[in-house]
Length: 96
Image (cartoon, rainbow, N blue to C red; front, side, top):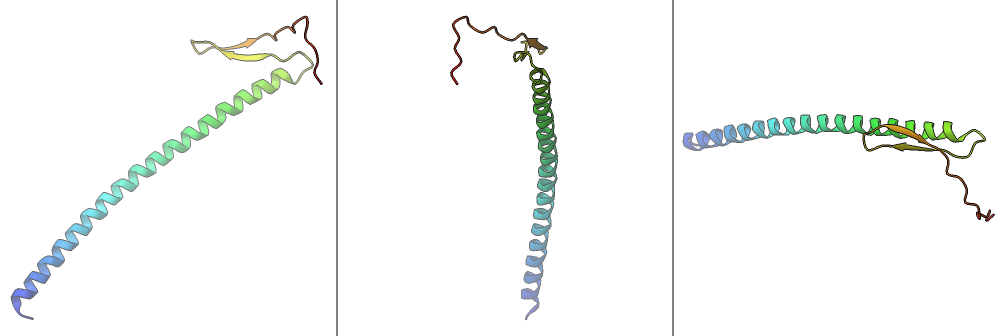
């Protein structure tokens, strides 16, 4: 190979290496972003599961006794309230 061709090949190799390094840096940054998003979503899912479990536990505590079922409510300002059981209608029939 003559010198000019070797210089061109070397320059192309350098450009390719530079391109691959830049691509690797971009991919590493993207991986970091996705890992952070994954951690955030896992925390959100865990929090949602805990809130759902709290509601189920509250409902179970309220309705496990021999009293008519009560209802848990939430007001527009975010307060949790206990609603009394609704009285049965006078003409209600048992359909079982």
